[in-house]
Amino acid sequence: IDAEEGAVSGAICPAELGFDGEVAIYEYFTKEAKIVGAADKLAIDLPNPDVFRLYVIAKLENGKAVIGASEKMIAPGTYEKTEDGLRALCDGKFSVVAKAGAEITVNGKTTVAEKDGLITVDIKKYDIIK
Image (tube, rainbow, N blue to C red):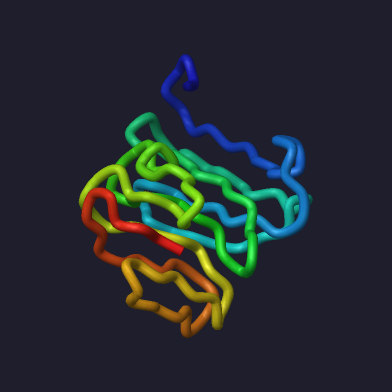
């Protein structure tokens, strides 16, 4: 994004995007995830034009934030909300960022987060996720 192809740096602040409370930030290329306060600023440094970042920012609800099928660039578009929970729209790896003790259940099988961070489970199209 720099005309001379130099380093670029900046920051993102979830509160400036309308978020409040705690949020999860997931980065697609590095697969890094963290939980931060909405007012926190995340420094972004891109040392050259060959380094990219694509962030998903999601609000924590009940100790977890849904990312979606994490191998897809537009992970939030890989599920839909239903009255039964979330319905997967593709096969793959489904991720949530969770606080320790939070649960994700796929077709009755529950996975509990042992520590704060990313939980990834295998899904099939039309699986129900809670």
